[in-house]
Image 1: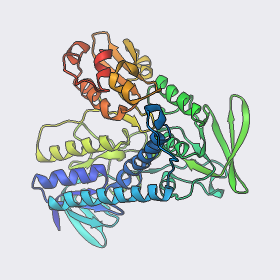
Image 2: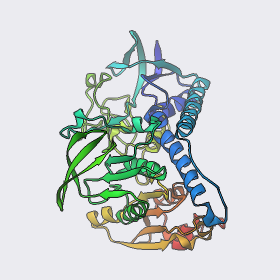
Image 3: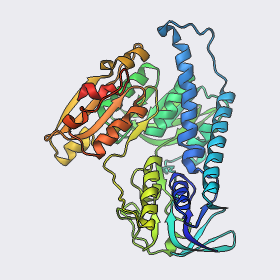
Length: 447
């Protein structure tokens, strides 16, 4: 069985590469050991956003009186929320499969093993290929904290399928995943505590806006322990005690459930990757060039395995670049404008440089900050809610970074992504006509 392209991993990178290569007429085989769509579609991006939207609708119902609307006895049914999440996932997984089969991609279910750069084994069958694309994804990282192997903790996967709400939840890790689950469970009335080792939640995002999000959620009842290190876990009857240490000394809290959310790490072991002389980075990820090609000719690496951002949209673009290189088309990967989004309520999104990264690099800049209330559409749809838009402008007027706190930051950030990627100057960007009234006009106002 000979193929132009063999792809290991059916997540966003893998299925994008397979669909594009098949559409271009290449003979493609895709190996996936579990479900098409990978972590993102089955237990990450899509299911979490489905749950968060249900929580957002419930929030709107509870606070509808602010908009002159009465919603008597608003309530929720967690089992139906989970069932809807599962329905959405099934629908989208079938959609991915349909796109692949439409483009003549051969889909093999099973764990593939690389024999060499042109040979892959799966289910006792051997497949030969001219090009190999590795998209093995990432996995949840559980730190070796004393006692962690003695407690019944949740990972994000467990939290997604849980049909009973705990009375209290301690989330270890205040990154994107941790804060999104904090938002969900807080909206449904769970007592939530977030424990973060860094001095602010959402490491990598703009610190000032992250602090605003933390302050707003503190008002909603979430307790935050930042600059706090977890020392140990202990079973405590119907819950778990978390022993921690911070500037105030040692302390502890007890919660019915523990959600471990300290991050993910690329899957760099298994799949026969050691059978290839792949050059690695300091973090053991696979080193690639601007065409997503590894140190081994005709072997490409896309998605989390590169260790760059572990984001689905980054993986999709990397896959496009890899396939274009195989096809001989001119294309290169750019990481100048990779957006980051946190789907809390309100949302926070950013692209390009942060003040922290600019200061660290010694780059001069000007910070422009504007309340989201400068957008009429935002005011109309966000009664009693604040927000902020921040632009970071270079000395020559180039837009270096843009950060937004307020709904729908995830939808309007694309405008800023294009501005940063194209290296637009403020005078160039503000010549575009922004439709009125839209929340995206906040960029026009800031410019």
